[in-house]
Length: 255
Image (cartoon, rainbow, N blue to C red):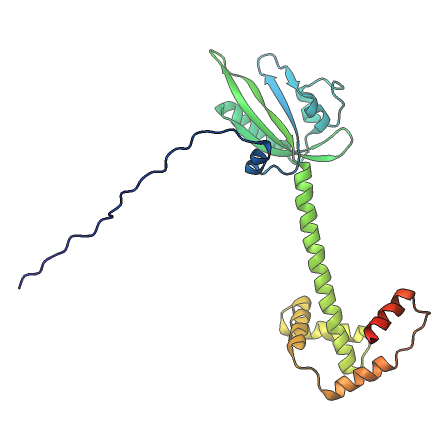
């Protein structure tokens, strides 16, 4: 008995590449959306002639370094004066490597401007070669990225503060439960919570959060506990004259 092998199936429709689209004009809003234009940054230009040692930079570079336009003569000494001490050695190594290779470079470093403020900069550079002298000029841009760095730090701080508030709230609620259940004061409740969290090995914050989450999903602490809580609420006596807003809220809740 002979077996026949069917040929492998092949696509019936050949792949057709998409037709190139004709270039069209772009509006300002469309271009801004495509480039994801966000935080505005101060950008300046500079150039350095390696043969003569002369520097030139735009007014924006002076502003970035804390000077009014034309207040200081562009020079290597001005740049060295404002370099952050912690970044100086790294910046020299990166710059030397770029100059020797003649490649385009970009690096970030910090400066201390004329007013004593720390600023974060992004420096780009392109070597220009002479016909016989090799690299004889460096041109590039200086971008002050301090606002972007500040925004990132502020977001990190906000997240840390939010997490701290959540953690503190869980711990305080857990202490309140221990105070109510065991009839102890706040200091004793905190000591007990620390002790129990040490026994679990989960840490104070995680222990408090997990305990409160479990209690929140539980059906309650029983009829006796509910009655005791109601008695406590019933015994509340105001120690001051209520504000008008407090009285209005109380009336709304009673209706």
